[in-house]
Image 1 (cartoon, helix red, strand yellow):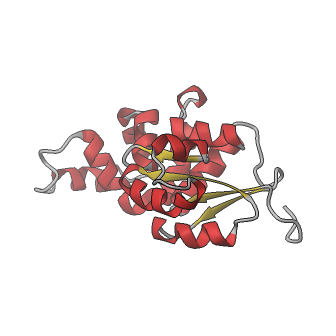
Image 2: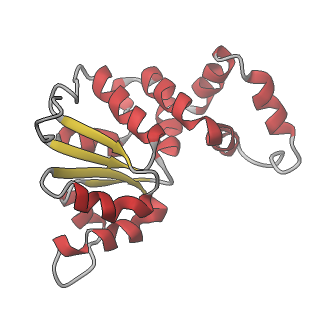
Length: 182
């Protein structure tokens, strides 16, 4: 995408891990968002949404958000639906798609817990993962919960790996919906 031309669309995501996942799934689907003039922006947190909506107001805006942040997204997009706070269906019509819990949770479900454990092993981190599982605060938690904790500060690296490992017909619904709108 040329620096002189405005983007055809701007995808607003909370952080870099989400940005990498969107780009990776587009690439796996045979698309180059850059070539399509689509800018994917990691906002540095959902609380920056209103600022980014203002900065990119002349572009088609789409985005992903975590279910726990729906109120922030709805209030930031309230001007698009005069007279009331947008609900989830409104947000989807506007091009903003919810991730249950967050995108990492969506990716864990899409890839599968056992496959993610194998990926952790392939990355040489099985020892760290097993040590984390043995911590007193983790012992009674599910494998899915262990994986969420383990990915916590590894989201950028593993987000792309998970997208590269999933069957394309099992892509997380919010990612699929976002890409289909572009």
